[in-house]
Length: 199
Image (cartoon, rainbow, N blue to C red; front, side, top):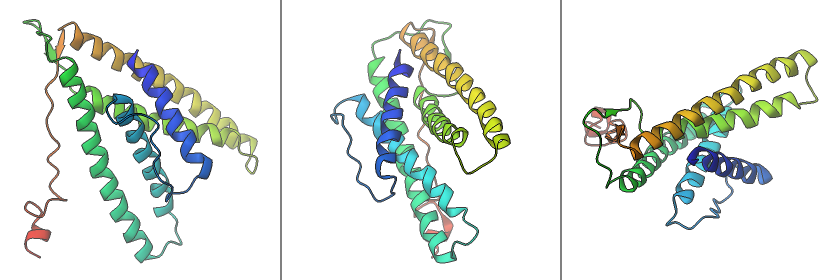
């Protein structure tokens, strides 16, 4: 199952990041660039870096200058994340290019790669929620609350994994078909954002 493999790669990425737990550490992708595993690992690494940037920017004592710098990093990260999702969808488009959809085949509201994107974020939630269940400098009540939240996240992982694998199998068997729209984000494009092209 593709989701099982993806989860293992996400966990590997998250664990590797937390060895040093620093935003400036290099990405040492263990997978060849020609493999889908390379994109899956890189995707989660970007998500992991962004997770920690989102934590830092919420520091109530952060200076405006530092906050702006981090906001710019988050914007760049979001663009890179979107690009990677599109690369992953391109992999699936190529994988299923010879499949002839059934006449009554339907399109899914979400492409495989965007569902995998949600699975990557979910794995980060599971990792950090599990950390909270083991945190010593807090109350039993907090740990218990986090334990209950962790159970829900693990159930979500199971449901989302099943949905992803079902979707991929449906595309493979011709019951569903893929149609991928590029995100066409406008705010990063100096020809489409009026603040940029009028500035």
